[in-house]
Length: 154
Image 1 (cartoon, rainbow, N blue to C red):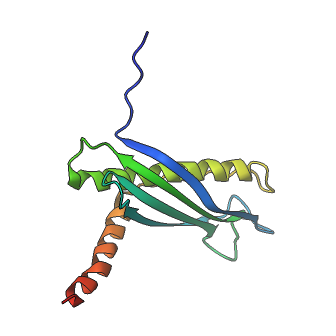
Image 2 (cartoon, helix red, strand yellow; image 1 turned 90 degrees about the vertical axis):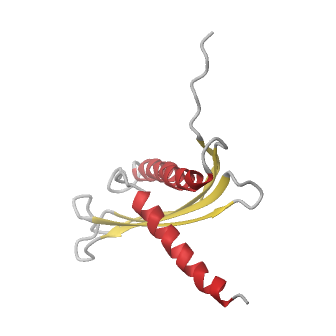
């Protein structure tokens, strides 16, 4: 009997879409340039220092309104991610966020592909994104937002 394959140190505990809206644009075309706006939000689970709640919002639209892309889409997906306790504390959050958002983005890509495969202009697949810079920027903004509150505390 073969040993099971080793599991990733980052595990998706649960995930689900809270918003999924796709609209075919009249006169739109897959040949026109799309715009894609990802927004991320996260927090460490209060009950487990190895878990994070993640929220990913994706807005797909037209880069040029005069030349509409085939579809407009609004997707929101959330998840609970767990990182192995074997990692150093300073590495856990980065592992959870970069890998977790990559997993969520892949789920969003699959969902959009499935929905548009039966839609007016045919299937659309999201490009591959790197969440390294998005996570760094979100962490920076989060720390800046909490800094004034910490300074005001007597």
